[in-house]
Amino acid sequence: MSVEIAELVQQAGPYLTAAAGAYGGAVLTRAEDAAADATANLGRRILQAIWHRRSTPELEAAVLDVAENTDDEDAAAALRQQLKRALREDADLLRELAALLPAPAAGSVTITASGERSIAAHTITTAITGDGHPTGR
Image (cartoon, rainbow, N blue to C red):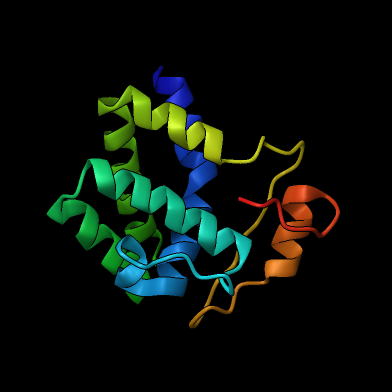
């Protein structure tokens, strides 16, 4: 199962960073926002699923660190580590998050965020769906 967790964490990492960058610390409690782009919204859903099962000071600190500096690779790694720990301890969460994430594409997807909610949503959506239309997730 550790290979599956590592792959899921690698795939979810950019979404987590995008959500924390877009919403800051409020990502853990924010209600659905129709204006949120697909990437930040999916990251928010992933973080909320983790938070509902494992609300720890370490998770909150990791989210806040990423929110303060989305370009900090160490902060992003700490957040991914919290995700990895949660997935190792909760098989149901692993299945839930695997169902949320889109199937891996043949190539890689690069997601870049800087500043408040300045994510290239159209490019990301096109990369995820292949046609520029939201996935409904």
